[in-house]
Image (cartoon, rainbow, N blue to C red):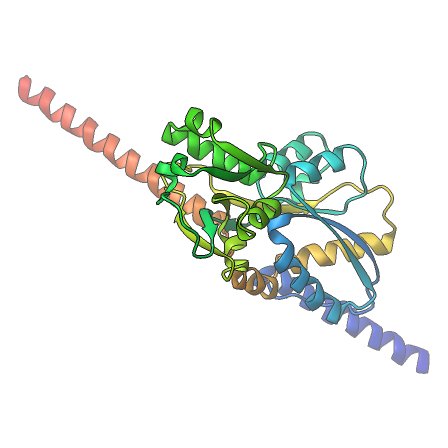
Length: 305
C-alpha cells in the first residue's frame, strides 16, 4: 500500500507539472524543474553580454546544477565558429542575417528560432567630448570614427545608413578605426581614442558616465529593424541532460522575467504579432484605396455613357 501511495503522489506531481508547463507556454511564466542539470553552450552577440550575465544568475538560482557557458562576440564571428564546428547549443544573434544563414545550412533549428528583442543604432562621442558632428548627416565633419566591421551586424546597419544618406564614399575617406565587434567600438570612444563611433543604444546606456549620445539613426536612413533572434543549434555532442537544460534555458530567455532584465538594459520586446498586425492594417488600407479608386473609375465611366 505504501508503494501505491507513492505512485499516486508521483502521478499527481506529474499532472501538476504538466499544468505548470502548459501555463508557462501560454502566459510567458517560467515553470521550473529544479532537478535539472547539464551544460549549455550559449553564443551571444556582444551587445547582450550585460543583460545575459544577470539572466544567467537568475536562472542559476533555480537551476544551480546547470552550467551556462557564454561565448560573446560579433554575430558574424559566432556564425563562422558554428559553421566551423564549434560546439554550440543556443545562438542569440544581433541580426537575422547570421541566423538565417545557419538555418539555410541546417545548423540552426528553424522551428525554435524567434525574434524577441529590438534595439536602436546611435551615434556617440566621448563624455563631454568636442565635435562638430550633430547627427549622422554630417558625420564626415569628424576627424575620425570608430566603426564595426562589415561582418558585424551594427557595422552592416551603419553602412546601410551611409548608403541611404548618400555619404558612403565620403565616410570611406575618413580615418576609420574598425572594431571586430560593438564592444571594441564602444571602448574606443569611451576611452577617447576616437572622436565619434556607432553602437547600439543599449551599449551607450551601459556606460552613460563615459559617452554621450549625439543622435539616433534616422528612420528613413535605417529601414532594416534591429532585431535579435534566438534559437537552438544542432549539437550532436549534447547529452540528454544537456539537451533538457538547453531547452529550459531557451524558454527562460523568452520568459517575462528575462524580458524585464532585457528592458532594464535598454532593449525593447519585439512581438511578431504586432508587426503582422501593422502589415495587415497597411494591406487593408491599400485594398480600401484600390476599391475607392475602382469605384471612382466606374462612376466616371457611367457618367461618360
